[in-house]
Length: 414
Ligand code: GAL
Image (cartoon, rainbow, N blue to C red; front, side):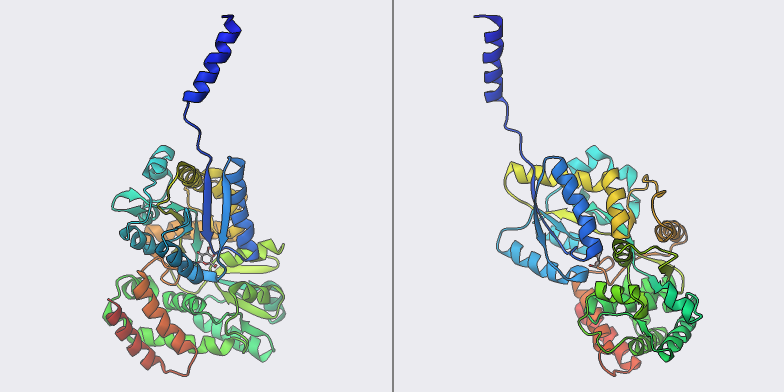
C-alpha cells in the first residue's frame, strides 16, 4: 500500500473510533424581556453561538421573575426542566434540595471561580459544598433615579434624607409633576419597602428584620415608621400605577412625566438602552441611609439527559463567569461584574459608585442581601412579608396594624 493510502485509511479508522464531539445545546429560561434586559441577554446568546452553541430561548415576561418561577415549577413537575434557568439566592438551594440541579463544580474548578469571586457571593452559588450556580452580576437595589431636567426646573437636589425626599416630592406634586414613578406589582412594592426599611432601620435593623426575622425588630416602633413612610409613598404615585411594569415606570422618569423612581440598577439598563446619559439626562443616587442591598443574578443548570445538553450547560457556565461576558453583559444590564478582576474603565459613574460603595459596605458589615429580590430569605418567608407590604400599600390599613400583621405572617411562615 502506498504511504498516502495508508495515511488516508488510518484517518478513516481514527475518525470511526473517535468519540463524536458533543454539540452544545441549551434551552435557557429567563425573565429578561425589557429593552435593556433583552440587549444584555442578547450578549450571552451571541457569545454562546460564537462558541458553537445552539440556544433555545425561553423568555417569561414579568419583572422580578415571579411568572418565570411559576413556569419553571410547571416544567420541572412535568419532568422536562430547561437546561439553564435564571435563579438566585436561597431558591438555588431550595431547588437543589429537590434533587433536580446539576453539579457544575468541574467547570468552576477548571475556571478558578474561587479565585475571582467574592467569598460572600460564591457562598450563594454553592449547595452542600458543590458549585450549583454561575453568577452573572451584582445589581444594587437601593437606588433613586431621577430626571435631571425636572429636578433642575423645580430647584430640587437629589435627596439625602427621607425628610428631604418627602419635601421634594411635596414640591413636585404641587408643581403638577408625578413625584414617584411606580408600578403596582407586589415585587415593586416590596422593592420600595425594603429601600425605605434600609434607610429607616439602618443596616443592623434591616439585617435583624429581613435576614434573621427577629420578632422584636419586625414589631418595633421603627417598623411602624417604615410603614408610615410607605403611606407617604402611596401619596406620591399617580393613580394609574396598578399593574404597571417597572420599565414603563422608568420611561415616565425618562420623558419627564415623573421625577423619581426607586428601583435596582436594571433601571439604568433602560436609560442606557434609550441613549440617555447618566449625570446629564438622568441622575443616580443611593437612597438615603447607610448600607448596600445586593441582588446577584445567576444561572443554575437543571439535570438533563444527553451529551449535547450537558456540553451546553458546561459551555454556558464557563462563558457566564468569563471576563468578556462579565464586562459586555454588565455594560448593558446596569449592574457591575461579579468578578473582582474586571476593570471598570468603560463603565459609567453610577457603576463606579456601586462598586466603591459595595467594597466599603463589605468592609463595614453593611453589605446586605435584598429580601425583595430573593437574596435573603426562602420563598415562604419572603412571600409572607410581601403579602403584608402589598396589602398595606393598596388599602388604608394603619401602620400599627401592618406591623402586627407582619409579625404574625412571618411567625406563621416558619
Ligand atoms: C430582578 C433581576 C434583575 C432584573 C429585575 C427586573 O429580580 O435580578 O436582573 O431583571 O428583576 O426584571
